[in-house]
Image 1 (cartoon, rainbow, N blue to C red):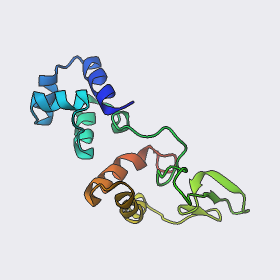
Image 2: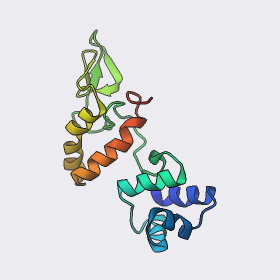
Image 3: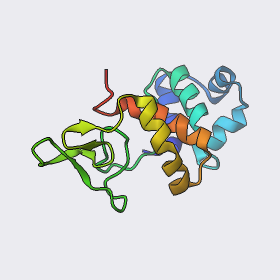
Image 4: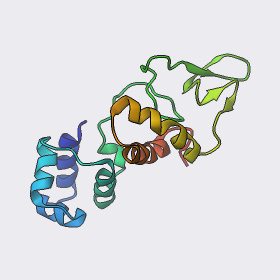
Amino acid sequence: MTIKEALPAIRKEKGMTQEELAAKVYVTRQAVSRWETGETTPSIDMAKLLASVLDVPVMRLLDLPQEPACQCCGTPFSVPNMDKGTDADGTENPAFCKWCYDGGEFADATMDEVIEKSAPYLVQATGVSLDEAVSFMGALLPTLDRWKQ
């Protein structure tokens, strides 16, 4: 579901008007309207604030492809050269990519290490700024199997 579909539905579920939501996230009612019509898209950081104000997971507001992805870094397996990782016995592990998990071991110990290594590739692939890539990954990674609490 796109943000222009999700945002008005969630806002209405919460019994809020565009004006009330706008006041809570420090924007104009027109900004909320533009997000809801798809004329503009809020930044990742604004999506995080909206999710917090609406008390929903940020991933509910982000339009992510519904395809298999690495459960460590979030990269879709449809990306060229995105092979799956391997367990210690050499068998393919369908949950993780080869860059994150190889031979039964994770390449990085912390989420911050994964973000630091992967964010520049996200910048290159999408053209977003490094700050936006880091912010996006900071929202995405906690939802993935490896990092879920």
